[in-house]
Amino acid sequence: QSVLTQPPSVSGAPGQRVTISCTGSSSNIGAGYDVHWYQQLPGTAPKLLIYGNSNRPSGVPDRFSGSKSGTSASLAISGLQAEDEADYYCQSYDSRLSALVFGGGTKLTVL
Amino acid sequence: QVQLVQSGAEVKKPGSSVKVSCKASGGTFSSYTISWVRQAPGQGLEWMGRIIPILGIPNHAQQFQGRITITADKATSTAYMELSSLRSEDTAVYYCAREKVYSTSSSTTYYFDSWGQGTPVTVSS
Image (cartoon, rainbow over all chains, first blue to last red; front, side, top):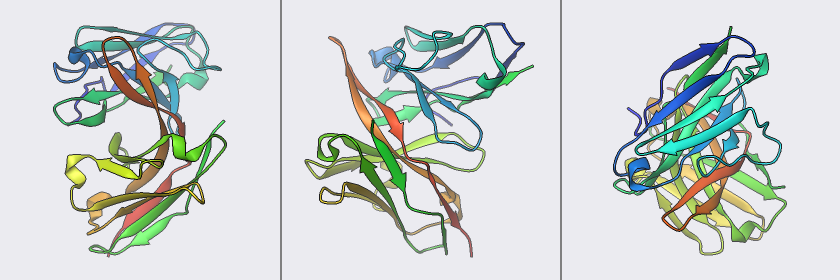
């Protein structure tokens, strides 16, 4: 059971927009800790996608955006492309556990 | 640009130990934090612990208490993670990753901007 809760899967057609939620609690996201997102293509290491809730590292397309409100955060992907098919993970810090924590991951399928 | 290169795949017996290395190039090794994250087959990511080479002080997630040792060798820019008393549930891909700090006026958190390629560890009798 992951500390941060994500939907197991989402899907969308090419060109569409999808969102992935990440729900936490008062000891992590709700305590004000920021959320970061990673993309993991099959058989590869995770790659940083969004840091500090909504910041994109250099090289990440602006089709990817993030937001945070209350005890939850969201990753939005617009203009879906076939190469976006991957697993996506949110990550934050939990003060009760004194640990970095991840969501369980969401598998994005591009129809 | 930091590059992290990990040691190769391991097969271990239950009850034994495994030591995985992570060699860094680019950047100043001793000035940043290296974390270890694992991923069991078909499962999500799990943070295991970290070390700041310049301080040599590790810390780890509670569930690995007593089984994990994280060290760093500044001379060779290499971090190590040793896990003991292995059981079948420890079968996973183990990643090292560089941590970066993200600070605002209200909080400080950490994220991973560079990852190693992963080291598969299989625990089987």
